[in-house]
Amino acid sequence: MRTAAGNAELALLLEVAGTPKPGNVDRHRDLDDLRFEHFLAGAVGARDGLEMAAEGAAVGPAFERAVEGMAAQGGGNTQFGALLLLVPLVRAAREDLSQPVAESVVERTTVADAAAFYRAFDHVDVFVSEPPADLEPLDVRRGSDAVPALEQRGLTLLDVMDRSVPGDDVAREWLTGFERSFAAAERIAAADGPVADRAAATFLSLLAERPDTLVAKRSGEGVAREVTERAAELRESAADRERVEAFADDLVARGINPGTTADLTAAGLFIALEREAVDV
Amino acid sequence: MRTAAGNAELALLLEVAGTPKPGNVDRHRDLDDLRFEHFLAGAVGARDGLEMAAEGAAVGPAFERAVEGMAAQGGGNTQFGALLLLVPLVRAAREDLSQPVAESVVERTTVADAAAFYRAFDHVDVFVSEPPADLEPLDVRRGSDAVPALEQRGLTLLDVMDRSVPGDDVAREWLTGFERSFAAAERIAAADGPVADRAAATFLSLLAERPDTLVAKRSGEGVAREVTERAAELRESAADRERVEAFADDLVARGINPGTTADLTAAGLFIALEREAVDV
Image 1 (cartoon, chains in turn purple, brown):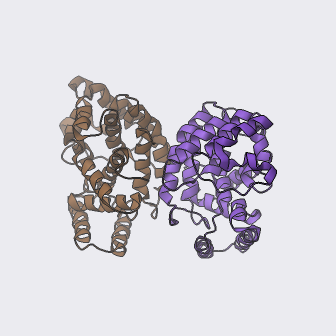
Image 2 (cartoon, rainbow over the protein chains, first blue to last red):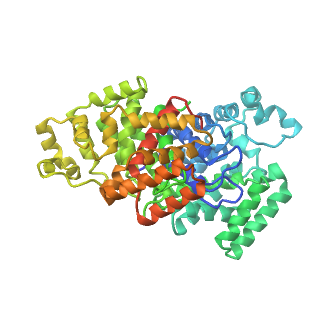
Image 3 (cartoon, each protein chain N blue to C red):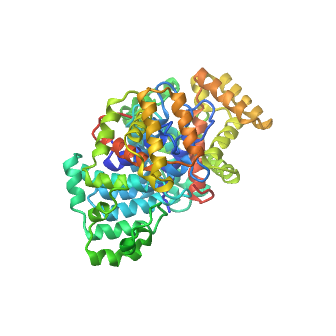
C-alpha cells in the first residue's frame, strides 16, 4: 500500500514514462538539455515536499520544499507546474480526494502560502509571461523579493492563482476545483493497458481539448491552437501510433513542449492511483 | 542536495532507465508481465525502507521494509537483489561510503537481521535454487517459517550470505567488501554522457566479466557462460549500438534476464551518485 506522497511521486514518474507524449520528454525522447533522467531525479527530489503535504503542512511551504528538491538536478524546471497541482491534491487526500475538498484546501491558503510560492521561484527558472505594468511588483520572477509587495496587498496563494487566469491552465485548476485533473483521472481509469500508455493517451485527449497554455506563452496562441487542432484530428480519426509518433517528432523538432498538458496528466495519474482506480 | 535514501531510489530508477541492457526490462523494453512501470513503482515503494537504513536502522529490518514496499506492485520481484546491496551501502554512507565501512556494516549484522531477511521472502517470490538436503530447514522460500531454525543455529545475515557463495553474486558482494559494486561506480564515473547511458555501458562490462548468477540458476551455467562470452565479444570489438540492441532482443526473446548484473549496476550507480562522482 503506497502512501499519498509515494503515489504523487509515482504519478510524476508514470507521466514522463508515457510515450508518445507529443512535444515532451518521455521515455523514448530526450531533448538536448532536458533528458528523461532529469525527470527521474526531479520526481525523487520532490518526495520530501510531497511528504510534508501528506503530513498536513501548509500548501505553500510544502510546495516550496518540493520545488527545491525537484530543482536539484541539471535539467532545470522539470515538474514545477505538476507540483503546483499535486501538493494541494496530496493535502486534500488526507481528508478525502474529492473536488470539494481540493477546493477547500486552496481556499484556505494564506498570504504566507503565497510568500512560499514566490520563494519557490528562487530555486528554479520557470518560463512565465511579462506581467502587466501594474503587476510588475508581483512578477513571480522577482522570487522572494516580491514578498513585501505581496504582504502589503494581502494576497493569498489562491488570489495569486486567480490573477494568472486566463493564460495559465495550472492556475485555472485552482479556480475550477481541479476539474480537468479529475476528468483526466477518469479517462486514465477507463482506458486499457499499462498505466504509462493510458497516461500518453490521456495527454493527447487533454491536448485535443484546449490549447496548452505553456505553448501559448512560449510560441504564441496561434501555434497553441494549431497543436490542439492537430491533436484533435488524431483523436477523431483514431490515428495509429505511427501518426502520433510523427506528430511527436514534429513538435520536438520545432521546440514545442505542451508542458501544462503534461502537468494535468500527472495530476490525473495521482488521483487515479490514490483512489485505486488503476493498479501498477 | 539529495539524501542517501533519495540517491538509492534514483539509482534504482537510473538502472532500469539505462538502455540497451541486454535481457532486462529497460526504458525501451517491457517483458510480458514485467514492465518498466513496475520498476518505477518498485523504486518508489522501496523508499521508506531506504530511509530507515539512512536513519541508522539495522540492516535486516530496513531491508525487509524496503522489500515489502518494493513488492507493492503487480510485476512481482523487481529489485530484491539490488536492495540487498543498497541497504548496507546506504547504512555505510551514514559514516563513510567506502569498502572497509561497508564491510564493517555487514560484519555487524545479527541473527535478528537474518530473521528479517527471511521474513522479506514472505512479501515476494524470489527465484532461488533448491538448497542441499541438510540446508532444507534454512530454505529461504520457507520465509518466516525458517526463523526458528536460523535462531537455533545462531546464523547472522552475513553467515546466511556466506552460505550462498558461490552461486549468488549479490551475496558475494557481502563477502568481498562490495568489490564489483565499487568497481562499477568507478566505471560509471569514468564514462561519458547521460548517466543512464553510462549505466547501460557498465552493465555490459559487468556482464562481460562474470557469468550472471541469476541466469545460471534459471537457465544453467552453460547459458550463463555463453551470454558472458557474447557480451565480452561486443565489448572487445567496441560493437555499435545496433549489435548490442540485437543481442538485447535475442536475450529477451529467449527469456534470459541477467538480473544479478542489473543489481550490481544499481549499487554502482548509488555509490557514484552518493560520492558525487556523477551529476544528474
